[in-house]
Image (cartoon, rainbow, N blue to C red; front, top):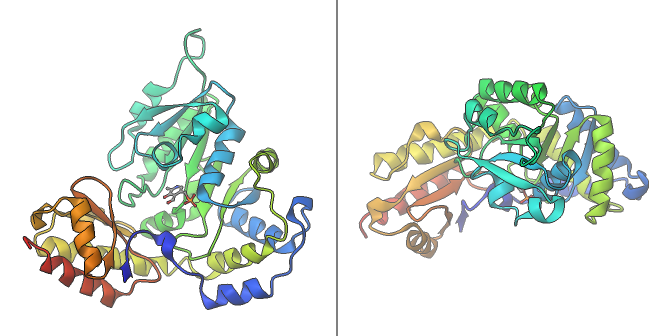
Length: 342
Ligand SMILES: Cc1ncc(COP(=O)(O)O)c(C=O)c1O
């Protein structure tokens, strides 16, 4: 099977497996795991922050971040199709007791003026307090869209002026960085906290990091414990994360080239996709030219050995990653061709 469902399907590399087998470990709840400490320091340094926290998943990282920035009854401004709102099981309400002010964006990017208008006047007795703005970069449902940095800068400035924190869901911040040429620490400089994933395009088997100021991460550490995320000899996993950060970032450019190739070739044979929108490791493809809706098309593709997900009734998403080759992308274009009006 050629698997384009997500970059989360990537398997750990041999170098990761070797590092895991020999990792020096200790009890991380006692802060005695030297490999976790190394990973947290490395991640924080790459993002230009004081401290880092290893968490089980991107969802846990986002939710610990939100819990640490907010109080119950607060409002969080987030894009209407953001992962935090769309895919995290209602956790912001359930775990932190905050409500989402959803700002509709274009491919996940919120207009800074819309964000400014969404900030509540805390003097009004009827209103919740806006305590946090979340930015997802790259944006998953936006097809791997990279934010224009000037939008991030403008939102961050407005937030700082009003004493509101900014969290960046940077699950794929290194994809944003490779595509834009803007280093991760520059992206992160506009946010008080950033979560990024080791287990997506970077191929580690498990884990994400939350980074921020030392004081913020200390408070986040307690919230991670509250959620059952205090792990013990977890250097076994952190070892793979170190290999991910040290060796797997630059190669993301190959995934971006493959997504571009898919988008160009599929547009060339009549599918609805705009190659200029394949900026990182995703191609969003309207499959109406096949005469099928997206879920049926996904079924037909599967029979021919290609896996992907339907993300709207007419659109499928192809995510490129370490474990699909350029040749497999070309093969996939042929399979799509065979399904035109089939
Ligand atoms: C933008 C974004 N944030 C957060 C997550 C959550 O990561 P995890 O699946 O590790 O919980 C994902 C997962 O795909 C994502 O795409």
